[in-house]
Amino acid sequence: MARPSAYTLIATDLDGTLLRHGDTISPRSRTALTRATATGARHIVVTGRPVPQVRHLLLELDYQGLVVCGQGAQVYDAGANRMVSSLTLDRELADVALGKIEAEVGEVFAAVNQDGMEGLMLMEPGYEMPHPTLPAVRVANRSALWSDPINKVLMRHASLSDDELAAAARAATDGLVTVTMAGPGTVELQPVGVTKSTGLALAAERMGIAPQSTIAFGDMPNDIPMFHWAGYGVAMANAHEELKAVADEITSSNEEDGIAVVLERLFA
View (cartoon, rainbow, N blue to C red):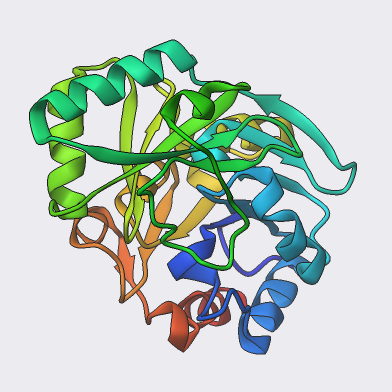
């Protein structure tokens, strides 16, 4: 079958984008992705979640390809069940960055995603999980967060909005780490220079696919680098205004199958 679209790679975020309420993927979205890949296009998941928090979803999708996880820090081969690439955030640097942020905004509450395919999410006292369906382990104090290698830090503040906390963190850390907002209640610290675009670029290179042949779907500011890298960026109707401002198109919300709306048009 001839490929009806210029895009050979479909990059989709998960939360707020492909996933609907309750971490579900609608039959319509599944069908649209299946039809698109039947023409020769490839689908790649690009998510802020680390590998251990996405493998169950990949099984549901019968997904066998590469996956970009941990805001770009991890590239995982789902078919082979192996890590292709994994970058860690220096734990001493992460602790220093949190201290600098707290010197400006007062106490923050932190959690970490440990490195590796079996890495845990650890939460210090006071940190409230924004995504209650994801598994996490409560530890006694902040120092316990640094027990094993990590790929990112998640943080929350009692009174600042996500936008305010992210802006303050960028100013306070001044290039020590990459600061991103990945979803409601989810401001994160990653290794310097690591974004969804760096992970996607690595995966796309392995697949032999160029940026201009990529269409990307997302909903939060952490998707901005991916939109800048890809040939075409589509923001969901429920997306953050910063992402909408750089999008080539705005589709329906994740609850209204916004990805399917676009793919059905492109891969009729």
